[in-house]
Amino acid sequence: MFTVQKLSDRGAAEILGLDCARPLAADTLAALNDTLLDFPVTVIRHQRLTAPQQAAFSRQLGPLEAQDRKTYCHPDDPDVLILSNEVRPDGTAVGIVDAGDFWHSDSSHLPAPCKRTVLYAVRNPATGGDTEFCNMYQVYDALAPDLRREIEGRDGIHHISKLQNPRVTVSPARRDAAAYYKERERASEPVRQPIVRTHPETGRQALYVSPRFTIGIADMPDAQAQILLDRLFALMLEPRFHYRHHWADGDLVVWDNRCLNHQACGGYSLPDIRRMHRTTIAGDRPYYRAAA
Ligand SMILES: [Fe+2]
Picture 1: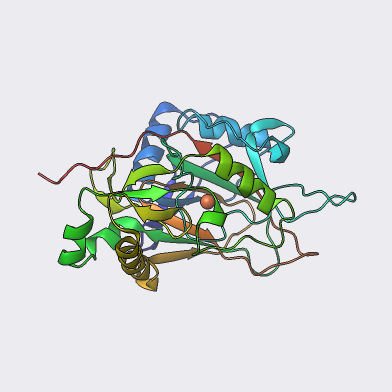
Picture 2: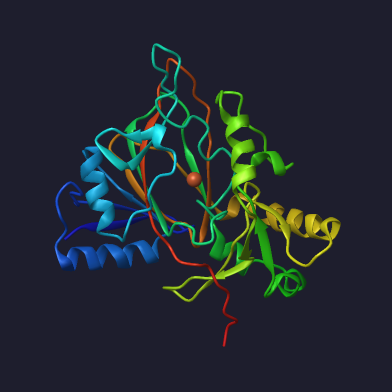
């Protein structure tokens, strides 16, 4: 029904011969779901999708999250968020400019973060615009035994505001960003997430912290927590865990936020345009279950 080819030992594969603009037959959808678990980064090649078609495809993978930034929703479907560096003649941004510019797992700052993200390349810049993925199953597997003991059963503290996190900076490319994060800081509580997350479908353990969203460790003095987080992030940053995706026109990438971190690599600027359409599949409360 479609072909799967491995792209990387870090859990990336490409699918050829699947048309996501049309509803999937039940057996095709079941095979796709299996592929998404085997390969947390799945690149579905050669798509041509309107925003409503992308949303309809995504809904077959589960209920969608409502987008909270209405300004950047696609006019043809409010479940589709525009990520873009395009600017209108009046100076307003067409989409989110600095989306994903530090390693993170999508919406881990929410109590029930999104399960999967579906990103469609509408327009790629001539240079730059790659997305890097880090396989957090493999990072967990590579943890030194002492480090694994230290984090077992503990919770990280996640927060959306970049202003609370010395490991990140607010992009000067987004004019309203500082005000946005100040407002979010007022409106958002920090959220506790297990540092080791048990994947609810595969049962595998994955490290679930990120430089973008994890700002502390619950029930641990901050100085000690920051040293521990630095050690975890240093391991995560080792290239042996990474797959870097160079987008082709028509790529539709589906990734699993329960076992991956990712970041947008940047490296392009106007008049070169990068435009992506994003949908997100609603998820569950993360948990940790010790191995039997
Ligand atoms: Fe992201």
